[in-house]
Image: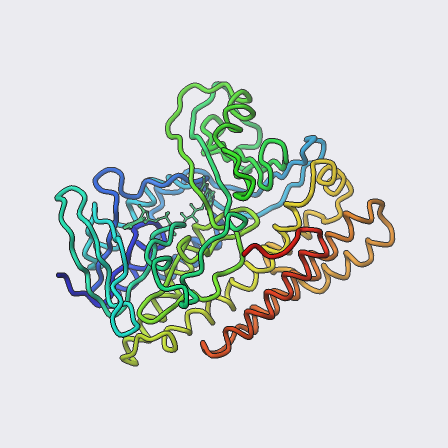
Length: 452
Ligand SMILES: Cc1cc2nc3c(=O)[nH]c(=O)nc-3n(C[C@H](O)[C@H](O)[C@H](O)COP(=O)(O)OP(=O)(O)OC[C@H]3O[C@@H](n4cnc5c(N)ncnc54)[C@H](O)[C@@H]3O)c2cc1C
């Protein structure tokens, strides 16, 4: 049996960064990871990251400059008929993703974390109503082990392997519905020739190729690309099949470097990111931008905020849900309310067909500036007002009404997340208000009842 202050399960971006922060603060930290050897840090991803996330991380950890392989100036967003292109400015990077992953694990180890590679957590250990550790298997040696700690951090990615094995009565155990996830597939390859504007990542809306999602081409350079697509989980479509059918034929591929898929939680924040003796970070906490599925930045953010909450818990000497609750409050205020806003917009977009998208983008119902504003500041009253005004002037009242409702409910639901309860005792009442607002919104856009 191993004893630590904190056990972090999963050494992806969220887990490695959390372990780095905790080890640097002087906590005896174990970092458990199923993968081993060269596979550590390998992640199927689009590999694009906004500069503001890197700037924030730099307050705690100096980024390794070799990891940024392409300076991105913004996003080109295409309508399904390719007749309309939005150019949305915003700085970012394409990452050398596998080296990013390995670098973060190295930093955690250099800061003092004990790294257990090839070690798969199988279940939480619960005693006296609190998580006090995890059971794990060492696949290479065929041995079972217990890791005991004051706090466990679930950083196991979208499976949330620890939190989902907690009793249903724990709000952190909330399962992901197929409506709440996107299935994605992507390949990384060199092409003959070059793409236009290699400093812009390209996003294509097309409900035939990527129903309920989008397809992308993210350049590492003019001749080296990350191309993939995401589809709405509830539709049960195999994204790889659509990739092979629609995307592969578009490129003169010279050689493939990596292929793979995964699923991404694209939903509102979990009801709670904490329980007695446990916190969830990154994909395990469903901390992702539900509109585009980007979650590397949120993995860093949750790693930072969770570490602060854990530090505070050690100062107080208590590790119960009330003490760890501050993490919920910090997360909802920093990002969770915008995640909820974008989730509302995501649900509305998933009800549109290519015709609606072509019309909406060509008429600039939302302009490039609006999109930038929403992504930087969330849905504000001025966007809602603008939609209300547009209702009077533009054709397609049904589409406009959906857009208006989405903006209105995004604002309302985001505001509810800003009023997230100060303690666990207020959670049920607050959550019922959120569900009521979602139910109303779904009815207005014809989406049917909340999935059970
Ligand atoms: C196809 C695709 C494209 C994407 N594109 C982008 C993009 O361009 N930009 C962006 O920002 N985000 C993107 N994302 C999302 C982003 O990759 C994730 O949000 C982010 O990597 C989450 O990091 P994480 O550390 O929470 O999870 P992960 O990176 O999934 O790490 C979880 C780790 O836990 C380990 N693990 C799992 N179970 C156990 C266990 N039982 N015991 C021990 N270890 C375990 C796993 O091996 C893994 O290493 C994409 C995702 C996919 C699938």
